[in-house]
Length: 299
View 1: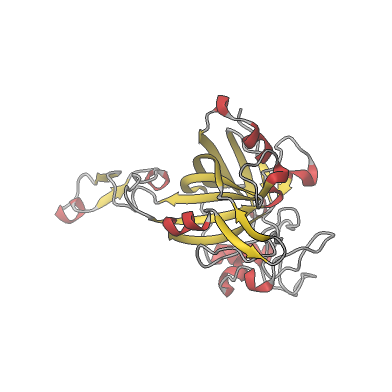
View 2: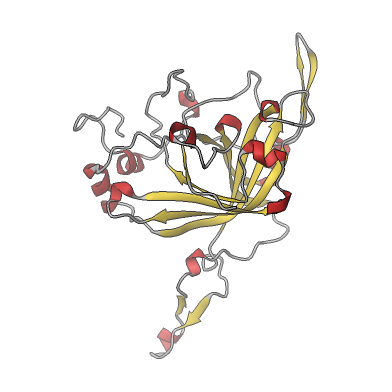
């Protein structure tokens, strides 16, 4: 059944194994935290209003895939303890009008010049274009999900918060497939070690939606998904262990990459792996540091 929303915390945390993993593309890290946002931050609100206009409604649609990779020397994962890493792959589809699709209407009336103008029908920006065939170049984001699974929608408090890191952004799906494939490597103590390929646990469609609120500080961005495979009556132990439901929705938030590691263990990404945003985005989203008791890095 459809589950109620949860909060996604893209935490500043690193689960990299000791050995160097094969990179599929240049890595871009995005980290986030969901429960430390002050309300009614006036400076941040003014900056956003003066810069990028906040858009409500669906801002992105596409295909979503959930993969898991078994631990070294394991061919199958029978529980979350056998999982080395859990991935969420987002492959956006451009809106129909951006791809030059047929979702347009000719303006009626007016002179000949006006007749040549085409208008985007209402809602066309939220309708994805037809899926191109035979192309390996598609924009994607590969996200490593912390705690090796999605959270329980029925849980309370911190257990409803989880983190994720955008480990790869690219457009070469063939190279991505190779990076998620099996591999072998040599160790001094254990000899040749075999790393199994990532396994597809589920796939479907997703949408990212901006929700309007009475106060700008209360605005939320939701990531919702609905599976096409497996079907509801085919969901099994694998999907249950990874917290994958037939449909679900989460609240997305992004953590300031300049903020220090959080939590009792002080776990976080090294500086060279953190996201690097342009200065105008840093100020618009996280505000200027050192004001009104704020930390030097902003929010």
